[in-house]
Length: 86
Image (tube, rainbow, N blue to C red):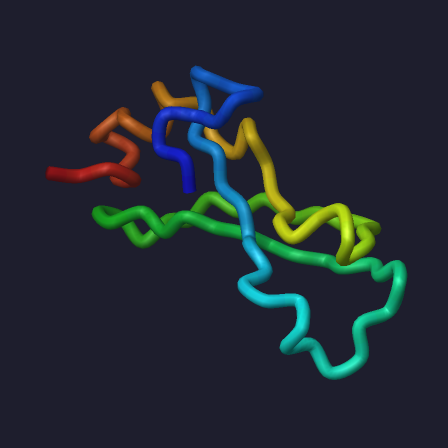
């Protein structure tokens, strides 16, 4: 998670799933299709924000998958929505 955006986005929360060690995989195919869903659960109202996607990747070139524009920062920081509290 990049709470202030990553190098591709500075006005959005960036969220990625990162593969820790590709050598630990049982059957590393040269190419693989993955489907993933990443979500943020609201702390106040139990609502959640989910983004789903499909990615084709090779282990040599890509160990992380996700979105640089997962959620706009003004939406994430809006306390009335309940994603960021405190």
